[in-house]
Image (cartoon, helix red, strand yellow):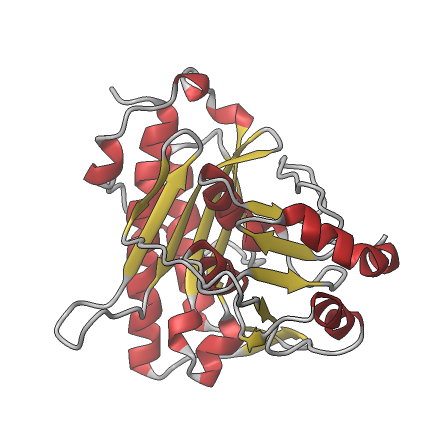
Length: 302
């Protein structure tokens, strides 16, 4: 039998794809059933159905793994109906890095954002919607899944793009990074929180272009694919661990960086504070340069 970490990642890829289908189904039905959890923090039926699918499926197969989802949902009869035990064959074909063999379920935490970019979803920016599943051993992000349910290469292809990866394996799936011109500084930042310290951080970097888009997973993808030089978000508590665990693992698996604005790594053990209270800095290179530029801003968040 394949090692636990590979089986768990294979299950996560398969269930993310299934959750994406539920998201598409809800959108097609037109019954979003939006609930406002807070300011600029909506929840839809797609969020709820996606999370129930992911959490119920993973807990049914890996009962001793800690699974933490964004949405605070009571148990539902739908949970059992939404379960899938499918595993992605392309993941199962990968050999588990030796350092992660012999890991036990009790050592693993999974952070789930069932629909990252809900504001984008309700506003019709569907390409920015992602399903995020991040796997941590202890405090360290080890593997991640990012699924774009509405991504479509051509009008004739089926919707959905899957990207997954693991430390010691790299990134797999539908992933082809480009290369930014070295003279261009393009920074991704928030679409809905663009004032105060957030703007000061952008000004400190003095980019050639700013991409104001929503969805933490989507902005991290822009950096991974070299469509943006960095993603900078100097906002206390503006993102949470389920937003960052999956992209954190993917970025570090290929030599990138996801830190707070002071350049410190984030931690993902099961009892950690959910909020990322010291902002977010994501880049493939030149981390020290960004940290130096953002030092005066970082002082305001600590």
